[in-house]
Image (cartoon, rainbow, N blue to C red; front, side, top):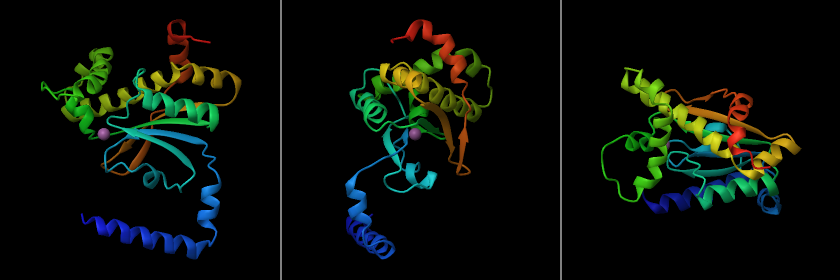
Length: 208
Ligand code: CO
């Protein structure tokens, strides 16, 4: 791709926006009040705003390889903290996607350097759900299920944080686990039963 193309596109975009509303950027620069925090994969094919059909200002977005939420990652932890305590979002979405190369790479017997500790978190998800996953004979179905279970476990990581526990108690904050089916374009709500999961794990992860 020619980088010039991007700048041309940018000029076209400004023109289009100003035609629709001459004050568009004036309004945009004033503040943001997103009600949704979206945590998804960095994969170039899973473009958050486009697949949800939302405009700038509507969703607070964090993306990394494999839509991971490791408890020691200062980056994602800061995003969650800011979204929950300052922006006061009503929804936190963890969105995985089928054909995720991060998930596939995690299960390969290969030294991937700096990616090893990052992707090891996905191996932990496999270990937690080994019985269910090993019972699936079809390889694609097994990968698909691991993508779903990874989303579920990352949602659990969201619930482990003090600010989320506090917000869930004091106001209406909902956690959602989604998968983007890259083969059809469909966004799937995994309908994870968080009340059940919370009851099961709170004895261990209860902070406040
Ligand atoms: Co991915």
